[in-house]
Length: 205
Length: 161
Image (cartoon, rainbow over all chains, first blue to last red; front, side):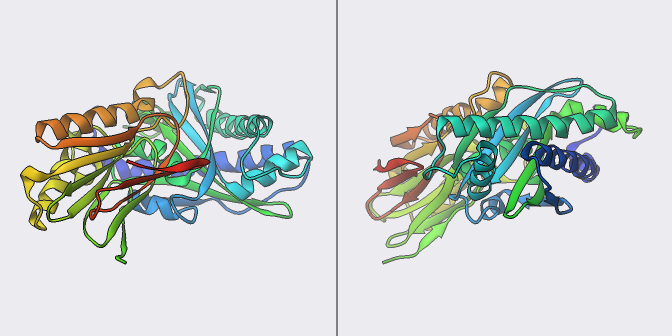
């Protein structure tokens, strides 16, 4: 790793992140279905590599309101990850979980707490599947939730990608019961964790 | 009625009255508006990171506070603004998530604001007003005609600095 520059790393880096993201997102959606006690269809996750200035268009504009759940990763691998939901999807999910009609425009404390729990379960199963695959310990920290403009929430992972390059990598996953929900996963291993992931997968760095 | 010029993340552009310039959803990033009050030529930069010197390979100039401000100053003066008359207003630099871990990445908003102020001071550009910090996103609109910097947030009234 020490001998590699980020430019040399980046194409391989994205390929690996993409593959890990696919596996993680699949498991996370299964966990979500179990939590909701129903069947949940998931589309094949799409991996999107965006320039920073395109980030705003992702959710229909950088000033569109969305929910972001952000948590740190500790253990053999350090870094962070984020799960993002459009406002409509987030509301639908929370209402379903709490078995009540969605209230008002913004979330109540109770609903935010439910959202944090959704994040906890989804990201936990995402990390578990990666942990099983790589045989590396990954422990999520307590998640934090923010409901705000898409651009503002995405600035957090974008800045971390900004330290390495000029693009941001997102795993988009769509899941539906009767309503279509769009969710995005972003996995952000710290730079020094990256070589650990690679070597655990049998790739020499 | 002029048009509205949109600046994306890690992007910058210039603007002449009667047009206005805007950037959507500033989080930990900082939006720097510059203006020459006489020619009414201004510009806006949406920076993400404090210091280009922390990174080994700088490929994208508008991404950083230091290189972004230099580039914006260059562009507005090329467009006819007078360097010595330039004044600035800034917004953003929030901490979007309250987290105990990851302190250096989480505090990047604060570090961005400090870096922007330092660079402005270094270049002798006076900072007229700011709306920075806290934990919410900001959409900003800058009007080079009046110098008004309008800040919109979710669930709070609009603010003009």
